[in-house]
Length: 402
View 1 (cartoon, rainbow, N blue to C red):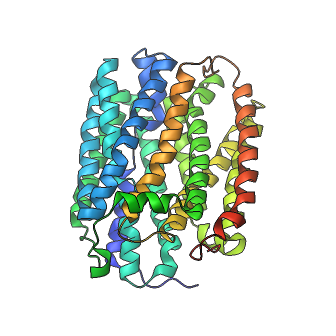
View 2: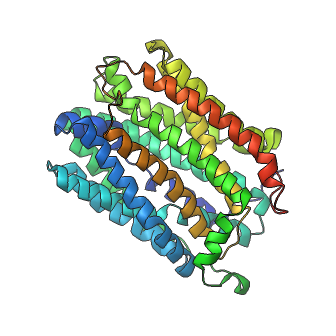
């Protein structure tokens, strides 16, 4: 279906999306924490556990507030608070201070997780363009990934020439820029029938509907696998003898560029495979990438990581739009936040458990067992969600295969 003309508000939101997720320090985070500051791998995973714990603790309250007051205030305050957290992370040698900074960063990130998609979907609805919701979510995701790609490249080069702290400083500047863009966004004005105060009982009731359980469960599965793979990026590069931070930044930049390009085709892929087929393809690509990575062949590293990024390019537009289509406006941001909470809590819990185990995570050891286990679990999960889709969707008249 041809897409109608894009409004100035949607264009401005795309710029915001391109800035607010551009964490230029991410390509060098493993080096910054474990090599520059001497934190061991258990401490490194604990930092990320605190980050995700802070996110899952704050996301539902922030989502409720976005439904109550509108998402715009959170879109403004989120990047501003992240800038403060990034500044702390970039210039502190203390593990405890870094833990606090990761908590602040996670809390700030939670402000925009859910509020951004709710804002965009309500704008699309107000323009009578519901048919374009997946397209607009995919385009915003593409802008996000292209922004991340540019920030990754800049962060890697900045860290190589000036030190990892400069990558954090660059991220601070990008968050401040995102704040100024958010100030230009309009408030979302809901129609009278949509102005009901969000109720926790209603949020819980909607979360327990089988179609919503399926969407949240599938999204969580994909999120966890992609994030576990993401945490292995730098150890994998180091295991292959690639220590130049410019290559670390360039690798993540390329991967996010691939994800951004794949997001261009989400809507057309969905028209061909529908929700069930597209969701299965996402998990299948992840499983195949883990199988290939278990071989430890350097020449296959880039294409196999690109397979994961193709899945990442599809996951968020599909997962968010599928949920948006199945919930009402009154609790939209809260339910999008709940989807993120379940995914991030699951990953944070797994990281916490791994930090206390003997999981093989060191770049000087073979990562083959880790990748093979991930591949087997991913393959089983993909088959499970594919099989459950028809049964869980037919229980609700709103939940055909859109």
